[in-house]
Length: 55
Figure 1 (cartoon, one colour):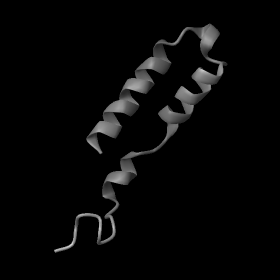
Figure 2 (tube, rainbow, N blue to C red):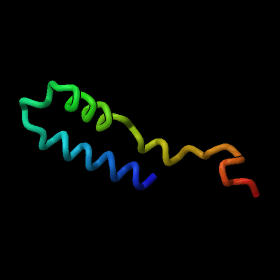
Figure 3 (cartoon, rainbow, N blue to C red):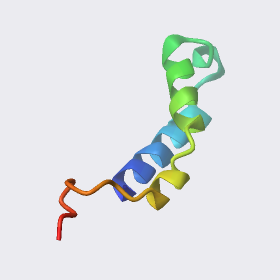
Figure 4 (cartoon, rainbow, N blue to C red):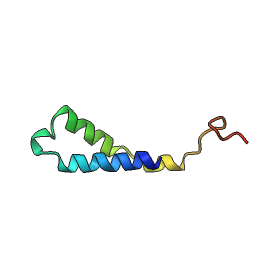
């Protein structure tokens, strides 16, 4: 999960430094989509049994 948060932070940095001429391109739109995903709530989700959590 920490890697996903770090990647999103990197993509947000990429978006913030993207030249204005590229903001409306497919690349800029995809960066914006990834940057806008709310992943903080994912850390609170408890995966179902069977995902390496069987005790």
